[in-house]
Amino acid sequence: MINTSKNLEIIETDNEFSYTQAISGDFFAPFANSWSYGKWQKFTGKQVKNYIVSSGQEILGGFQIVRYSLPLHLNYLYISHGPVLKRKLAKSQENELLDFLKDLAIKECSIFIRIDPWPETLNNKTDKGWRIAPSYSYHGTYTQPRFEWVLDIFSSEKELLSKMHPHSRYNIKLAEKKGVKIIKVSKDQLENYFEIFYSLLLKTSKRNHFNLHPKDYYAYLFQKSPDKIELFLAEYNNEYLAADLIYYEGNVANWLFGGSSNNYRNLGPTFLLQWHSILSAKGKGYKYYSFGGVYNSDYPNMYKEYKGITFYKKNYGGFYLNYNPSYIYSPRPFLNWLYNIRRLLKNIL
View 1 (cartoon, rainbow, N blue to C red):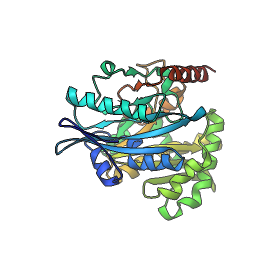
View 2: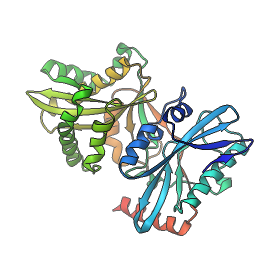
View 3: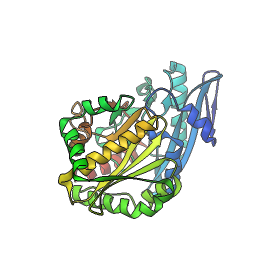
View 4: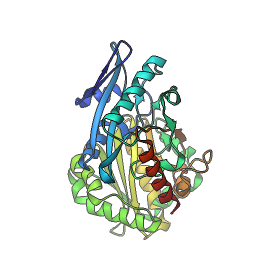
C-alpha cells in the first residue's frame, strides 16, 4: 500500500539502509521503531512493514507498523515511538498521513491502530477521528513507555560521576574495593553465556514479581543480533551476581535487560556493572544512554509500579525523556471497547 500526491509520498520499503536513514537525525533515536526491532518482532511471528515518508526530494521520516494478533482472529496495529518525523508537517501533509494510517487499519480489519509520533507530534489527530490513548493502555507487554530516563554521555567521565547521587558513587567504589569483577563478554562467546544471563533474569523476575517473555525471545538477541548487543557480568567469588544487556541503536545505548542474584547484594555489584556499561557506550561514541521506562511524578497515575526501579535509575543522573502522547483510531469501535474493558480489568486485578 502506497500514497503518492503533490504533498506527500508514503512508500513501503524493504531496504534497511534507506529506512534507517529516513528515521535518523540529531534527535534521540527510538529503538522501538528501528529496523532491527522489527526483525526481532518478526521472529516472534508478528507481521511488520516499514514505510518512508517524503515530499519531493525531502525525506520527512518513516515508521514501522507491527501487527499484533488477538483471539478470535482479531488484530491491532501499533507504530511504537513513531511515526518518526524530522520536522513539523504542513496541515495537508498531516491529514494525508493520518488518512493513510486509518486506511491501513481498515484494510487489515484491525480493531484499532495506535501511534506514538516522535519527535514531532501531529496536530490534526482529533479532527481526523483519533483520540488520546487512556493511561491504563500504556501498561502492556509490547506497549512502549511514555517516559524514559536518559543520560547524556557526551560529558566527561568526571562530570558523569559528579552528577550521580552520592549513594551510586559510594556503591561503585565499594564494589571495586571488595573485589567485584566486571566481565564484558566477547561477541563470539555470547551464546555460551545466555543461560547465565537468563538465570539472573529469572531470579530478578521472581524477586520483583514481574513476568518474562518466552525464553526464545531473549535468546534471539544472542543468536541473531551479536553486532547490536553487549553483555556485561558482575562476578565475585566465582559466582555471577548480575548481568546487563545493552542494545545499541542509532545514537543510543539502551539498557535493555538487567538481572541480579540474591547473593552479595550488599557489595553493590549492580552499580559497578551499570557504570562499566555506561563507560563502554561512551567509549563507542554514543550520545545517550537510556535506562528505559520510569515513573514520572508529573503523571502520578501512570507506572506507579516503576517507583522503585525509577529511584535506582535516577541515581546515575540524567533527565526525563517524555514521549508525545499515544493516539488511537478505531475502525471497529465496539470491539475496541471490549478490548479496553479487558485491559482495564487486567490492570485492576
